[in-house]
Amino acid sequence: MRIVSACLAGIWCRFDDERIVDPRVEALVAAGEALPVCPEQLGGLPTPRTAAGVVSSEPWRLINENGTDVTAQYLRGAEETVRLARLIGAHEAILKENSPSCGSCKVRVADISGPRREWVAGEGVTASMLRRMGVNIFSEENWLGLTEGEIAVETPAEGD
Ligand code: SF4
Image (cartoon, rainbow, N blue to C red; front, side, top):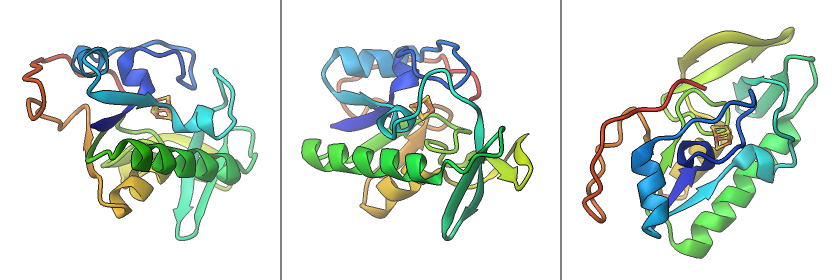
């Protein structure tokens, strides 16, 4: 069983009000092989919401474009996602790259004046917590699929 970023399954949950869909992820959910989760919604943030970025990861600190500290919401969403991953016995997660929650190779960063339109190598809060509990983390950019259900496909989703 897998956790997947809900936005990759076409769920309306992105910060920028856009809907994206990765047909591979949508197919996994339709087959009952993946649970779609949006950590930022689980953390209590609205959709759409103000873009945020990672200031630091030890300890975690995230701020949004208004300069508001949203660390508590991001941490809560990550913790709830970890709880769901435990409940379903998730062994793998396919998470949206570039997100300050779901990014596993690149994340949006921020400094004290707010998030920059810039992505750097690193992990988001949720990706980091899931990895630390032993879940294999992939993004829509590096997941090759086909380990459950032989569900093929090609189309990567656009950046967060
Ligand atoms: S990248 Fe993660 S936090 Fe952002 S909209 Fe998608 S599921 Fe939600």
